[in-house]
Amino acid sequence: MRKRYVFLALATLAFAAGVWLFSGTGQGNILLASLKDAFFPRPQFQLLAEVDPRTGTVEEGGKIGRKEFGGKRQTNSPPTAAQDPLPRNHNLTAHGEKPEVVQQQSGQPENKLTSRKEPEQFLAAAVAIQDKSKKESIGPCQAKRGGVPAAKVLFNEIAWMGTEHSPQDEWIELRNWENREVDLFGWRVQSADNKFALVIAPHRQVPARGYFLLERSDDRTVPQVAAGEIYEGALRDAGMHLLLLDSACVVVDEIDASGGWEQYGGDRATRRTMERDADLAGWHTSANVGGTPGKRNSHPAAARPSPTEAHYEQRESTAAPPVIASGTTALSMPSTRQDGVARNVVISEVFANAEGSDKGKEFVELYNPTANAIDLTGWKLQKNGKAIATIGSKKEDHTSIPPGGFFLIGCNRYNGAVAADVVRSASLPNTSATLTLYDGEGNEQDHMSYSSAAEGKSWERKAYFGGRCLVPQGDAEDKGNACATGAADDFVVRESPLPQNSASSPEPSEMLK
Image (cartoon, rainbow, N blue to C red; front, side, top):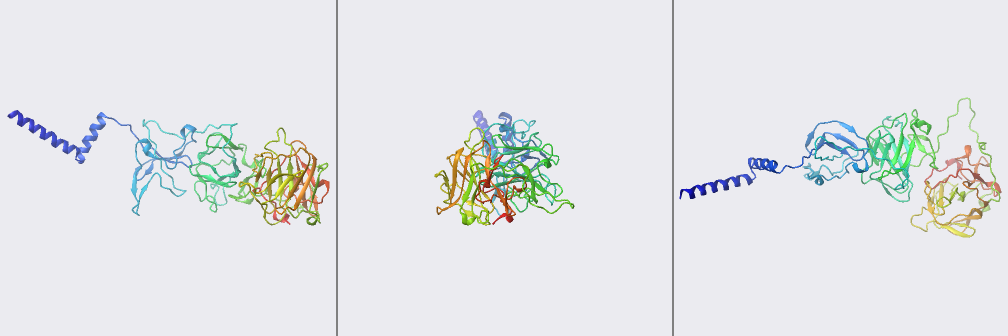
């Protein structure tokens, strides 16, 4: 009997202890947690940093929700393909923890890791590691040369000297030369020595033929234009070798200004930016103080004359004597050309015979000498009476040519660096061809003929200025292509073809008719 009472007493005590342990009381939870950790140890997670995924900037310390911890800011080198920075909406549950949810004044819960912040605020991301002695880092991306880039997005303008407001207000502009939107997530701008780097965050797109602005520090760098991305780090005034890499680390574009920015363009004293040339082959100093962020680049800034120089006088360039296009004529509707100057859209440049293969390189450029944009929908270009292109017949076609601007028709599946407004598969003959341009009503607007096309060179229509036709190079480079006397020498040979499209810089307004 006594043994039975002892057994019942022990069972009652065990039952009471179990109720106490699992009742949710503080002491019970502590004891359970201690036993669980003792017999079933867990991986240790440590919140090391806030990471700005837009820039690759790591904030040691900082806060997530209400959890505070100390530290300082540093900027690590850019990530490798295997060590990309954590994305904007990084989910901690993948590492075994959940993001802390705190209560806002509105009463609605806010996820401190995924809620959208203003551009100048950082987005927190947690770094979870097994070994506290090791730390995740954002390493450099190994640039790959010779690969196929994801898209034709190029450096377009660089404000390495800052702005009038502050020399710290630096910015970089990218230009999308594709006829489609391009997702820039994972793209990088980094220096060849890996001392400067930025990584573009998710949900960053550049529109077709549009611009994307990278602003230093915050979105107040260029107040009138919204930043596509914010970055940390400075562009060295002494110069840098910058690379533009796609998300696979393939080199898309680069500018080697390690010997100094000013050899390419830009002026520290006047805060004029470094802009890319219309042919994408070189750079120049912007004609505008502060440059042209988010807009078409300006023409090269003219050098200021010294006090002893006379006023500007237009003269035909002596850098290269005119070359007459043998067998070439440029004839169109006489009623529009009574004074030798075109007053309608004309054929301005033809490139038919590239060095090596012609595929992907041939083009016909049009020029609008008028002060009005012209809708080219339904306009047709023919070669020897056969159709090359009907503008607007494909949904991806651009159809408007701006005042004083250009329009590029790509032939033979053109894929040059300057994107064509219209691309077709028809090729251009290397010999004996007549090209004819018709408007949407079927009226002939222009035609030109050539008997031969020199390899690697193009035919270009002369400029018209000061009552005469000029070789459109050197001093007359920005005088348009409006010469239309009907003579055989209205066109000359251009040694280096210069295709321009509807997004290229237009000619000055004083040149328009």
